[in-house]
Amino acid sequence: MSTETFTAYAITCLLISLAPGAGVISSISTRLNKGFTCSLWNLAGLECALSLQIIAVICGLGAVLASSEVAISVVKWGGAAYLLYLAFSQFRSASTTGLEKQINHSSSGFDIFAKGLLTNLSNPKAMIFILALLPQFIDLRESIVSQYTIMGITMIGIDAAVMIFYTFIASKATNLISNEIAMKRINQAFGTCFAAMATMICLVKI
Image (cartoon, rainbow, N blue to C red):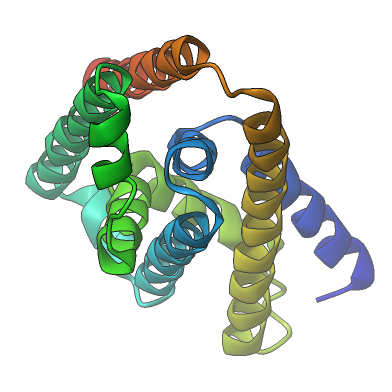
């Protein structure tokens, strides 16, 4: 892979990661509601899911999923249902009292990891997008395996860096937002975003 091709690919990955999506909202929401440690568990879950999607594409499972109407429908509606669950959780968080928030704040690392994992896996368009993106930057004259490995590591690294950036922004906001009413409005906004994403998945034909 030439330097020019790799640079173009890296820029593409950066722009994709910067675009607001379920992962970004999950990163910001987790940092604001659960704290820094939980945000790291959420990040691990998000990137683990992205790793699984990339591996699935490389192994050919992405093509199988894209060609199977039943499989894509299961992932699509399951993903939409999970995003609606996240929306409900955000609205529920917005209505909890101070004591209840202290209890909710003590979520285990595994729970937060699973949330991040399922958040990224719940979007069937992501795997199909990766399936369409990666081959565009492959040089058939060079080792396919090494190129896919470099591209996968690059995509995960850039996405992780962007999520950390959003988490850092959220940490600054945490210092400014001490008003419980303001946090309630923010959680309601996150809930609305998750619900909107679920609606988009339902309406868009994949």
